[in-house]
Image (cartoon, rainbow, N blue to C red):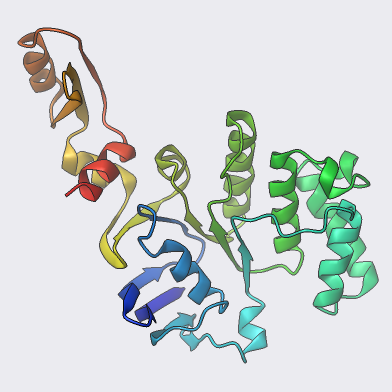
Length: 275
């Protein structure tokens, strides 16, 4: 279990993360959502020890996480938004370099690299240099590198940013497989469809504070499972209804362009963030 207790980060007078309290269960796929500047990446940074909290603490299975606790840190792997691999190295070289950083035996590095590259569908491209890989392949390679040391927790900061639709779906399938192996995954993303598809629970952050934590389904139900969109001079206006028949009745009384659809997590996000 991961526990964040009063986790806080200040930069001079700016409060980036404001006394965050959160529990993430072992094996859970959890989403951290919020607009730009909400504090998501800062929270991930503190959970990986890249950043030190101003106040509060992170506990892993009841034990306090610090930079000095190498054994506990080894349970966590982080994948950042930016590509952080040398462009002139091949996949095999990237994996070997990562393994050496963690003093893994050469035989173990080779065996684990073979297993992970095969699992991620990259084995046929293992001798390509990074500069010759597509964006989706680079993201998958970053996942392979992060999993080399058999972590128990995977922190993903916008892992599909910049991917095309096909590559994004492939990454979703990969992450679902990993979570199915009881890997705890914490994901930040701006793609609400991604969070709705992958995450068992999500938390909404606004201006450094935790606003709400629940399942995507419960959040959608609370807003209203059916949406009616009406095109007006000011743009599209949406109204939400618990019952389909109520939505249809409202729709039948409208003039002009309008449509009935299912409510999505993006609707929830937009409604909460625009308050």
